[in-house]
Image 1 (cartoon, rainbow, N blue to C red):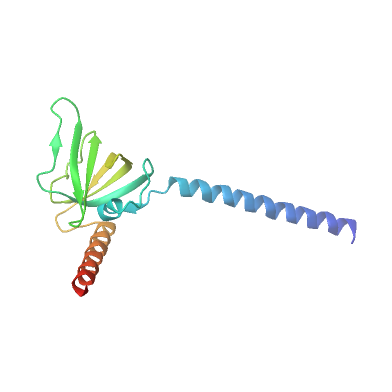
Image 2 (tube, rainbow, N blue to C red):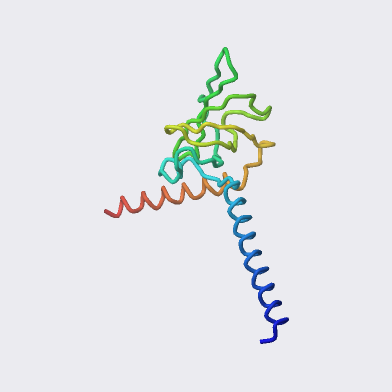
Length: 153
């Protein structure tokens, strides 16, 4: 092989290896920063590890909001009408926050309680985030399938 071709081949191989390493690091960094969405049913099934950051979506259970009189600490329950997940949040809730309405909270699990760092509320009466609507539909389908299996026994 001609020395000039050999140098070009080595340069191309080195460039491809470097590009592969850079792509691997970029994808790993992006994956760590993704917030996956889970419903209360998936949380109750144990699909989430303690301390891992994710988004929890559902409906705020009626009569579940409790506010601290001395701090900005708020606790409430998010439900998909199948399972419930208690949520603790320290901060000011959005103006549109209301019981019986959809919310998406970002945070992590701590001993079975979702500790939220951010709470987002829906923007009008007819809107439900697609992730929440899909999670509720999946939970209802799973519950219906479980009910049919029990009646078949």
